[in-house]
Length: 385
Image 1 (cartoon, rainbow, N blue to C red):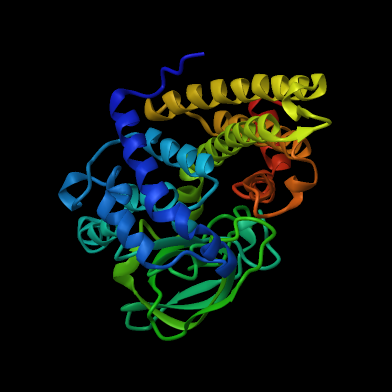
Image 2: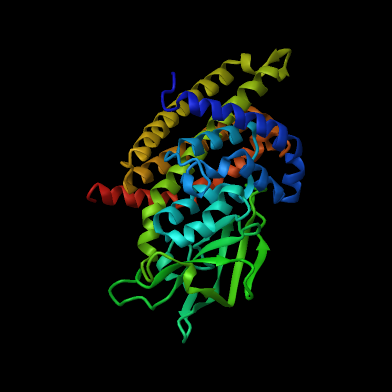
């Protein structure tokens, strides 16, 4: 079916992006994969291409386009090529909304121009060892100094995407104890300069997938964060986090769709070329049945994503909507990718084949941004259950 979610401008952007990926990423990707990280200079190239500035207001050097659809195109093209831009995935999709909605004019002038060029890379640090999805249980603290000039930040974070290359990290920390009737009270957001004394990057975590995405542990030991770097109001951080979850979950759903679509493309190409018993694997009835079933499921995922993209751009995507999108798309994509790997036979288990990398990369979609179990709870609550 013909997609109507994208315009000619989106397709022109897709063409430019595809050429960039083929020239600047694909030839080097195996090396980046082996190293477990992309080179820092890639981000400067993405800045020059304009990737980081699409949704940034014009007065700060961006294009000022208020649409998430360009991020969706990026996700689709990366999956199509079987590559990644590393930890920069959170730079715009997750971090930018916090800055545009909460930052003061002075803060925007300081941070957004560097965000556009890639000179200042952002990450966000929520999760702590032992807390998982229970953000209200965080123990990282930020105590205001006696003279009121800075916060003293202490604690640790884990699973921080982009944490190795980040120049600024939006850190969630307790600036006040929780109230007896409100565990969520007392959390604030600080935009921390990673060069400050006491800020340390720990292990770059070795994951089963997303190998080139730098995921790190962070620690803070008496880090003096200027009060000028408080984002939004003190003690209201938890509500801010909730406001941005729909876009984060939509982003994960888009990624799952992109991976499922790419997996189907890889499987069709492989089974068409691969010969067994003198015939292509694609000519066997079982292969046709499997590919046909996968195509139908990808079409269904696509329909959900396209409707969600339109709703998000119109400001109508609710938290329950986003949970439904994430749940369905990630679960369905997992099935598609598993079937497509099976059609590759033994080669599907070898990481030099993109289907193997997709299989490993896809698994986390049902965990981060809220597990599938959490999504089911959100949907059920919205149903009045």
